[in-house]
Amino acid sequence: MNPKQLWNRIFGLLRNPKMEWEEIREENVEINALYKAYLIPFCAIYALSTFIGDLIWTQSDSLGEIIGQTLIDFAVPCGSVIVLTYAIERLSVNFDSTKDLTLSAKLAIFSIAPALLFMTIGNIFQVQPINGLMRLACFYSLYVLWLGFKPVLGTVTEQRLGYTVLTVLIFVGITLIAHLILRGLLAIVF
Image (cartoon, rainbow, N blue to C red):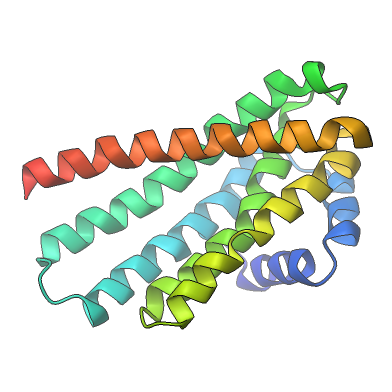
């Protein structure tokens, strides 16, 4: 994990996402390297923020529950992004886009990165209005995703909105189902 590389990528997506998407498309990297260099570190940082935030701010949770929630907050985004990668790739033919698994992984990983950053900040500073503002700022990832379809997958302008909406619905559905199942298992254990 290269922290400078992670920060530069997120900062680029926050500052100038159009230009950053062009750079992302041109990077010659395999899908496994994307997972190791970006997805796993992004999710690990987010999960670590859950652990730190819960230790600081919650009083009723046991250490076991906090560790369980931390593991869930690592596994759910990682798994959801991997499943989303395959969904984006499979749907590409329906939206006149390039069918490429690595490009789909780039789109899935880097569009969720700003949301993970904002949620990380919200997890650590669990006070209002900071937490609420960070949750609201997560919607910026929708814009980043929408922008990414054209340069990364070559999606035509008329198809981007529909592709974005369907992608978001799939991601939210995957994430909610995974959270419900894992939180249910955590409740059974504790």
